[in-house]
Image (cartoon, rainbow, N blue to C red; front, side, top):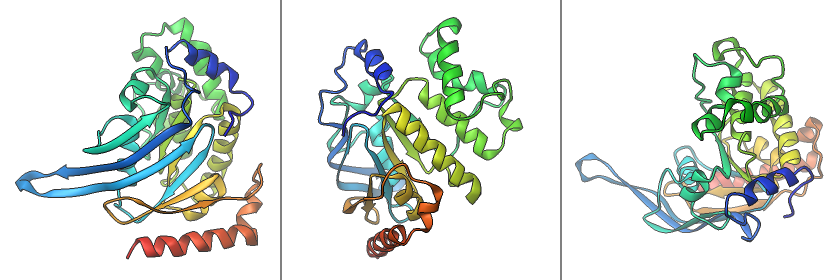
Length: 280
């Protein structure tokens, strides 16, 4: 999938990373990945087994599956925080570890993990600060990311002064400071109320359209997955493997009214049946 409008600044920044981030066919790829956790007492718990999945450049892919099936483990493989026992994960044609060190991507978890003593601006700028970017050079990038997620005016607020949805906006802004070519999202909106979730869904789609980043999005909500994604992937019970994929033919842009459309209901129903099969 071709990068979206607004993608040029990202391409130019990453040209300086020493990697051709558009040369690979896929932004993210899992090839026959296997991973087993080795617990105390010699117990072994297979987490993923034969996981194969790809995400194209600029594509939005959502993953749904039974609780505890290994969805979050797959995202951690893509970050390089976990390494498969067998198989391969590539990110923009390179290893997840190198992609992380080159700051090519962003990650948003269910817990926004904001430092309570730091302001919104300071939390958002943390990745650049850790990377050694000077305060002057990171100021415009941080302010632009804050504006992108709708937090303009709250730059000096601390996390305890923000709502749950605003804290997640802050976490997303922090991920955007790297001008990422891909974003990994692990149930980022599961802890907020339904109306806030709807607003965050719309804001995420707006950010995605403007940045052109590939997104791999884990959620328990089939409705959310269908509303957001180009493609929904259903994974099995642990150990995780892909059992079905559903292209989402809904037109973009997608207004919230689309969630009540009969075509949307039909897609949700088909995925729900696949998920029920995966849970057996």
